[in-house]
Image 1 (cartoon, rainbow, N blue to C red):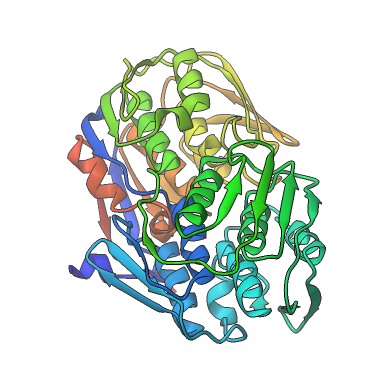
Image 2 (cartoon, rainbow, N blue to C red):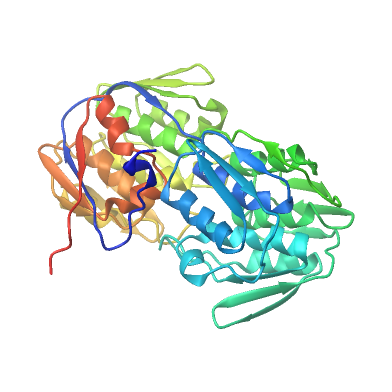
Amino acid sequence: MSDRDTEVRQVGQLPEIVVRGGQPLRGEIQVEASKNATLPVMAAALLTAEPVTLPGIPWLHDVDTLRRVLVSIGVGAERDGRSLTIEARDIDPFAAPEHLVRRMRASFLIAGPLLARFGVARVPLPGGCAIGSRPIDLHLKGLQALGADVESGNGYIEFRAPRLHGANIYLDFPSVGATENLLMAASLADGWTVIENAAQEPEVVDLANFINAIGGEVRGAGTPELRVRGQSHMHGTTYQVIPDRIEAGTYLIAGAATGGDVTVGPIVSEHLKPLLAKLREAGAVLEDAGDYVRVTSDGSLQAIDVKTMPYPGFPTDLQAPLMAALIRAKGTSVMTETVFENRYMQVPELRRMGADIKIEGRTALVTGTSRLTGASLRASDLRAAAALVIAALSAEGASDISDAYHLDRGYYRLEEKLASVGAEIERCRCSEEP
């Protein structure tokens, strides 16, 4: 195990990425298992006392944070190379530490399986990227519908239910997190649960497939209606998480933005249909083989309109990376963010490079410019950081990106993968000046 594999970068250490732009990317990039699917599957391992092994897991900051949350409540979570084995036998459902849960919103996903299996759970209010208010009301209402008593105070929420029971639940919004939490809770409840207006994201489908693999019964995954038949117990398994569609999409966008020729895989291209359609519309040439996609471009993209939506719409996680490619497109692109109200945090930094972007409420007007110049940039969140890297790759001169630790939450060895296809990019360790 290398030092790089075990390193966890902390806020305030400010590792920087330095990019010298102008080089088209050419070659193949390997896609990791999905971070957004790995995290709920790790939480769902709490549903059984038997070992669950997840091979091929990228050792990302968020994965390590959730592993540490699990360990803090008594779960065995051992890494062997790229595999993670979780054994949730002896657990303290009251022990989740505030300082870890507040780092990452996905940590709140332990509430549903803990409550379902032990009848109690005490979980700190979650944190995560500052990209908008992501209320947990839907989680709480759904768990209450399943029979939980909910009390809050001092930054914690406590759930109690001697035994959950099936219910009909309608989500006011197809929240991924709420769907996942309720899906896990319902899998050990008495009787049938129906979740209407459920999230349809591939990561939700993967969680449902995992629950079925450990003895659950989930029907309708990938549709707006999930039907869950509660079980009395679950068993262990070895489970391969799906490829990361957001990581794959980021590299495809980078290839198109730099006028490159990049092949990305393994993937499930069906999960990337909205992005592939927009890249074609912008003038990139795509070869879709199902388990990999090749993108070629001369770098002369055309302006397009993009509106983020819950799946199967265009993913909000790719809005910032695609904006970085469109700042050099011909014409004016119209981007509308409907999922999070504060997800244009990359815009001030892109403007420092010469981008022409106007914000009107939840709409961004991106007028293409023929020339971007390198600049000193600061990342505000995970996907904004990826956007700054893409913009720097297609700019003239050098850019340095501080607070690059955000990338480690969702991209495994990003700079090494980009360097392997021709990018002039490196990471250095820098201290914040007083």
